[in-house]
Image 1: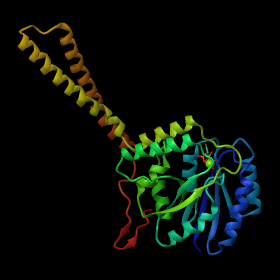
Image 2: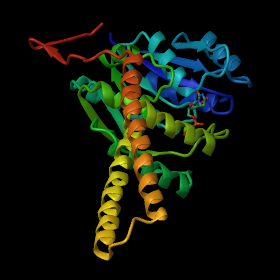
Image 3: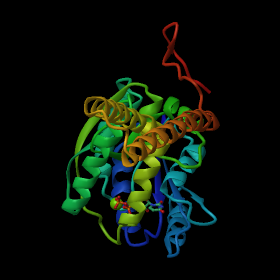
Image 4: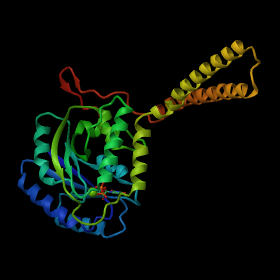
Length: 314
Ligand code: UDP
Ligand code: MG
C-alpha cells in the first residue's frame, strides 16, 4: 500500500488542532486504499501545541511529530517535514484549516495520473484583507518579472509532492528559504487544482506586515540576482546624460565663442564620476551574484526520465 505523509507545520496552534484532527481523521478513515502519516512539525510553540500532538499520538499511531528546539519559522519547519516524512508522496497543509483536507482525494487522484506536483490554487481568499490580497498580487507580478522560471499564481504551500520532488527539495539546503520559488525551480510535471481558501478556524495569524515584508525580500533575493543589476542599468542613462550634456555644452561654447563655464564643468564631472561609480558597483554586483549562486550549492539539474524510466534522483 502506498503511503502518504501529511506535513503540518504548527506554531501556537492549540486552538486549531482539535478541529484539524477531527477533519483529518474523518477523511483518512474514508480513504482506505492508502496508508497515512500525519507529520506535525512543532515550530517551538509556546502554548500547549506539543502536548496536544503527543496526546493525539497516544491515541492514534498515524500521528507523528518533530518537535523543534525553538521557533525556526515555517520554511524551515517544512524542510524538516520533508526530511522526516516517510511517504511515497507528501502533502503540505496549514494547521489552521485554511487548506481544506477534503481536497486531498483530488490531489491524490492527479498524483495517480502521473503528476509530481499537484498544487492547490485559490479561487478566493476569505477572511483576508483587501490590502493583503493586493500586495500579494503585486508582489508575484514583480517576482515573475524578475525571473524566467514560471511561478504559480495564487498558490500557497498547500500541495501534494511526489517522492521525486521531495528528494529534489531536500537537496536545496539553503538557510534563507522560499519554498514557493523552490517548488517552481525544481520543475517536474505540475497540475493545478482550484479551491476556495477558508478563513482561519481559530487562533490568530502568525504573520504581520513586518514578517511578510521579510518574506517578500527573501523571496526575491533568494530567487534571483536581478536586483544586483540595477546598478548596471542605472549606469547607462547616467552616461547617456553625460554624453548629451557634453555635446550641448561644447556646441554652445563653439557657437557663442565663449569658454566653458565652471558650473558646466562641474556638472560634467559629477555625471562622469557618478557614472563610473555606478558602473563599478554593477561589476561588483555581477561577481557577487555569481558567488551567491555558487554558495547555494544547488544541484544543477533534475532528471524527469531516463530511457523512459522514472528517475528517482536519490
Ligand atoms: N507557522 C509555523 N511557524 C511560524 C509561523 C507559522 O510553523 O513561525 C505555521 C502555522 O502554525 C500555520 C502555517 O504556518 O500552520 C501558516 O501560518 P498562518 O496561518 O499564521 O499564516 P497565514 O495563513 O495567515 O498566511
Ligand atoms: Mg493561515
